[in-house]
Image: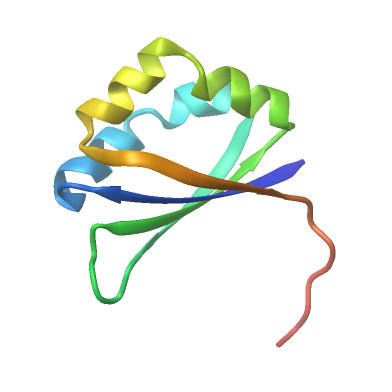
Length: 94
C-alpha cells in the first residue's frame, strides 16, 4: 500500500468535486482504496488529495490512461499536479 499526496489547483471546486467523485469506482478498479480531499484555507480552489493505492504501478497505469487525463482536464484542473509518493511508518495518538 502506498499513499499519494497530490497538490493541485482547480478553476472551480464546486464544478470539480462532482466530476471527481463520479469516478470513484474507476479509481477503485485500478487499485485505489480511498481518497481524502482538503481545500486551502486562503484559496478553496487549491486542493490537497491524499490517495491510498495498492502500489505505485497501479496508480501510474490509472493516471497515464488518456481517458483519465481528459477527465482531469474537463474537471477544470489547472496545470500539472505535484505528486509525492509515501509509505506508511506509524500512527500516533497526538
